[in-house]
Amino acid sequence: MTSKVEAFTTKELSEKTWPDFERLFSQGNGWDHCFCMHFHRPRGLPKSQRLRTRAERGARNRREKRDLVEKGCAHGILVYADGEPVGWCQYGPAEELPRIDNSRKYRSFALESTTPRLWRITCFAVPRNYRRHGVASAALEAALDAIGKRGGGLVEAYPISQWESHAFGNESTHGTTSMFEKQGFKVVSPFARTRFSSRVLMRRQV
Image 1: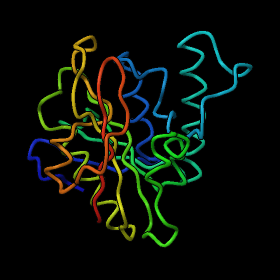
Image 2: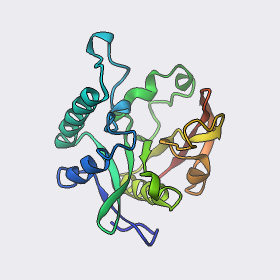
Image 3: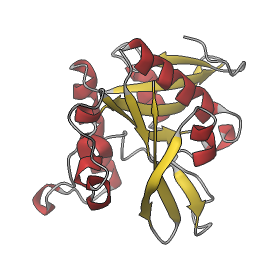
């Protein structure tokens, strides 16, 4: 699969591309502890299961993510430049990424059971030296293409609409509204607000 962004190519997450995913998430960019496991869990882990150090959390999340990949229960797009992984976008059917369902704000926008299959695009990861070069856009385009090839449906995203603080250098792991608007997404509602940023719920059919 080759994206329309000339400089980059994209591949699906799989057992074959797992080493590339692992390499990307082991670079110390701030995601080395998460391995994109947050949205796979319905809710936060109980206190008795919380680990003290980032290294411990990283080892557990890496192990659990690998298990999901082997079972075919984790989906995502890796972006490459000159053969090296430089970006990531997580997508999947709603049942694979259930964390959003337990948000009080989200429940008021729950869909009817007759709605076409629901997909979610939850996370992006781009190393600092590749940001603002179209990596996330390439990943998003490839994710939508992959969803279409799997039958399509309604696709949700939860991007940043406004920064309230510059504390984290304006890096969004959820994408931005402008990026999703370029792909035909429409804002449904404000979704979440923290001291650092505001997010919205966006949807489009694929």
